[in-house]
Length: 586
Image (cartoon, rainbow, N blue to C red):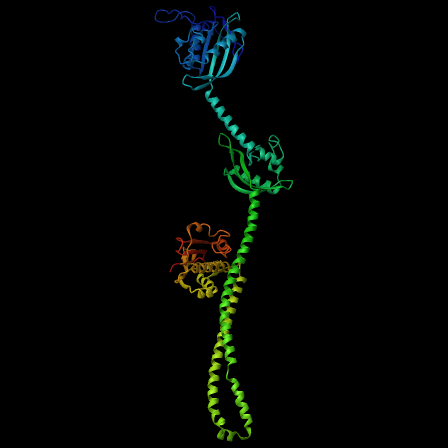
């Protein structure tokens, strides 16, 4: 204000006119004289205004400065001095052009001053202030002219507000928005946000494309606008449950059917959407298209069923082969018995009885004289006695061979009946003794074991009954025993030993091990031996062990192998579930 207290107006960006005392516009304010005792004289109102003004500008969280018409600083507050890194006495009276070269903002400050003095227009903008240490500070700059009482421009003034934190926050938010935008625009997965009523508030480009709407059009729409009731209703109920409980829904496989009938399989995860106060205001989720995966699973399931059927047929073929070997072995004995009986009958002395009968017929008129006087008659009793003994012995031998023949035929019938029994009950889960199953498998390979002079060792422990499909178990065991026989043959050693071991494993498992001292398995084959088509035999098809492993898995068990290497033999272990022991403690 002037000497008579008239106000001095100046313009700023947020208010066109603002009145300050003229005495505060001067580059220096002379303090009023003091009365004795230190009390100031003059207008107390002016002093109070000065004190209030200085207190205000010193404590405002902004940098404040004023310049005269030539651009010399006439006032700076402490915060402005800290910004420049200089005390007030090194700033006051200087122009911006006189500041050190490292102050990169000084030239712009000088240009701003010249512009405002020339045009009378204020300036408001954001600036980057580079400190000598390389750090950057962001400022909200407001510069305006200072007018005297007559409305003439007598200088400029400015406010510099530190907005570094706000700018950093804005940059972080902008970066996050860019990340979200990139995700929403480029993700092949369906990303979406919904309000408490399960209405879309934002959706990814891929989801909008599938629905045939724009990102703006989808806002406010719900699943009921796109899906049939069968999918829309459960999806809505899932989201409302998430909103009520705050618990996410993770990894749910859903079949989505659009109103046009097209369908899609998705793997969906949904979570509660919260505001900054932590309140649930909706949901958000990601749905991944797994249609191709589901189709592949269906195809794989069909292939698996076909493979299991082929496995069953292969297993039946293995069993049938063993049956034929055993039947063939028995048939050799049958053939031998038949040949012996045939030879004995062909060479029988029974024809001599006819000759004796014919001789006696010719002597029928005088049999006493024949026996008394004819040398033939006198020899006949001894001959008949000898013939009787011979025929009795011959009859015994024939009966013995016929009994053997009958026994062998019964054996064949038993083998065939056992095969028919296993084939008939395939697919039925039964409680069966593990040892009995192993013995059945051995009987089906008995002929091969005998022909190849293989010593069998049984190491059987009592176990709980198995809960299995006995045809599948037989398929696995017959194949393992036959493979062991081949391994023993290839080793070309004399002491061929095949050990069958049955033992409990835990409370609910049984292990059946087929152990041979044959050629062994090299380490590189241990990981491939159960693979489809893998075999080391020239005439092998590579299906037996693979089908056995599949069958074991179908039974809830496993088939594993161990070998220390070539020439060390191998151990195949079939582990199967058993019936829980209900006997309780003794």
